Length: 201
Image: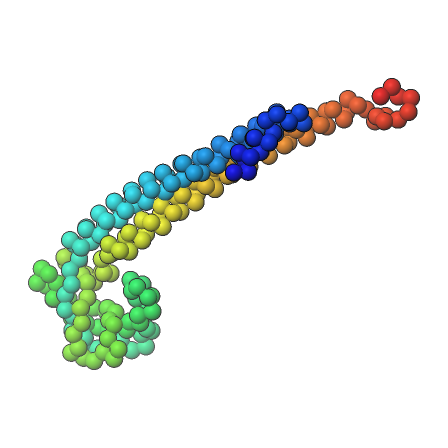
């Protein structure tokens, strides 16, 4: 709005320099770019991220399977780990040695994490595995994928605003430098005696 009011105020002003009008037009163009291009870039990037992440969600759901594992023993001295996939990020998990049967029928044993408070030998819990029975993280859910896509779109929009504003500031900085250079040339022409009596100025 300041750019528009500036253009209107300066349009018939005799003190208005050409650079003042150019600066106001640059500010108006930057404002219009921010208002028009930024939402387009944000929605485009967010949409592309949403498509890619939802495709990843479908692939992970197709390739990962829930199986039931049986605790063999709790691993001594194992620290409690926070589940990075949990919504709160505070779900503590304990490492145990467990047996499970893979979707292809093979039996596996290995160290995995469980949400059991006090795991005992023989306790059963569910884990995610790939088709070969290797323990994997749970698949990405649609809500988390959508949240990541929104964040990607928002980040792209902010980056666009930063680039446009940075471009505007660069143009104005170069204009100001040129203006100062012209002033320096004008002062050099006036000479060191400017304003003294009897110098003809």
